[in-house]
Length: 106
Image (cartoon, rainbow, N blue to C red):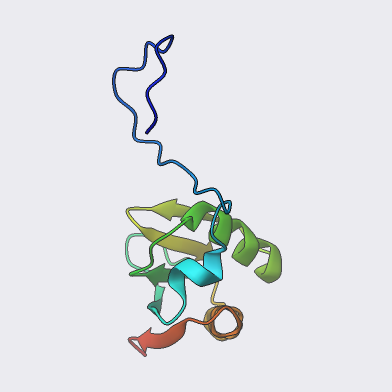
């Protein structure tokens, strides 16, 4: 982080963006493995697709997956949750982005 003599910044978790601009999500996660599972525990019988072990801008990826699946979702504890069973559709989207995909459970 560059110092500015007029700045009153004490602490920041913000990372500086390189001169080439922000990296694309596929470049950041290319070759990484995404684990996809279907979960119903503690959800009153409602099915949720959970994508775990990812890094990068999860909020951006979550919004794209929601749009493609036509469902709601959220980011919790470095996992993406999409409402409903969309494992196959999400696997296809992530493979197009360069992820390796593994299914957890049945």
